[in-house]
Amino acid sequence: MEKTLVILKPSCVQRTLIGEVISRFEKKGLRLAGMKMTQLDDTILSEHYAHLKDRPFFQRVKDSMQACPVIIQCWEGIDAAKVVRSLIGVTNGREATAGTIRGDFSVSSQENIVHASDSSESAKIELKRFFKENEIFDYKLSTLSNLYSSDEI
Ligand code: ADP
Image 1: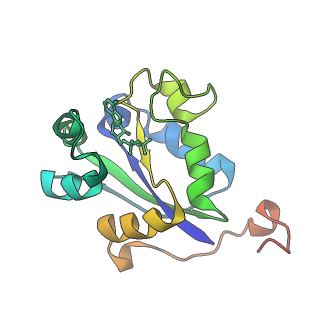
Image 2: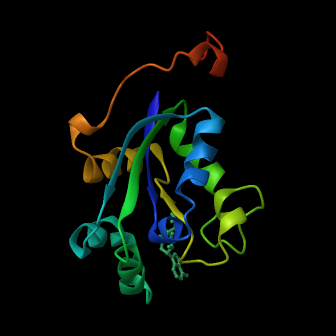
């Protein structure tokens, strides 16, 4: 099983959509392996958004991510990174497909409710960035046989 990182951004917290967004991942069949509320700072965000450092909105995005505490989560499932990205939709909420989290709850390219790792490789790096080892829990879902066929697990 693969694990991936999700951050419920200040836009999600302020608009009181935390439960709604968690519910999307739960209903899909992903397992919540870790979750905490934390206040992000400029140092960790500069590392996390290093791929955007030459973009004009770099500082604005980092400031937006520090506007209030965020909820950091680790979700697990087969192909979890790909599955979560398909649930959240494309970056710009105005262009995201209806039915996705960004498509349903965002009208902005910046204030787009969630961050999710864009591949299994970046998920590994990002989980290490935001979680200590003892904050990730490897319990088993009792519904596993209802979520996957025996040859999938
Ligand atoms: P994603 O979050 O979909 O993986 P990126 O890694 O490209 O997208 O961008 C990281 C975050 O930076 C986005 O989620 C969004 O909050 C912000 N962002 C991206 N593009 C823009 C833009 N053109 N204008 C403002 N903010 C943006």
